[in-house]
Length: 124
Image (cartoon, rainbow, N blue to C red):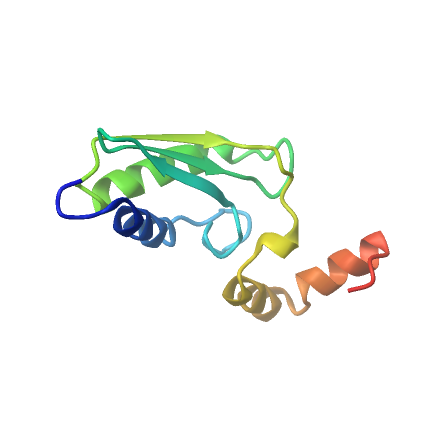
């Protein structure tokens, strides 16, 4: 794979996706925990599965297009990119990175995981 192995390409793709933001929550898709899977075939075609924070999310088309364009422009070693939205498993705030959770707390003034646990009666 052009001097880069699959893991190195996945790291580069993940770093590129740190530049893709959910327009409703100004946190990148990696730290939001929306990157469900990245696969690369032998022909350097990439398939990315992205989750959404809510079913019926009105920005899914935007996320797909932005993620695809961002990957293509930042990882020129790949041939093709397919980004699809995955609804299973449903997203929860537990998928967020520590950095994403802290940024959310800074932006909105509360811990989203604590709020989620309170709302659903989960003892964390």
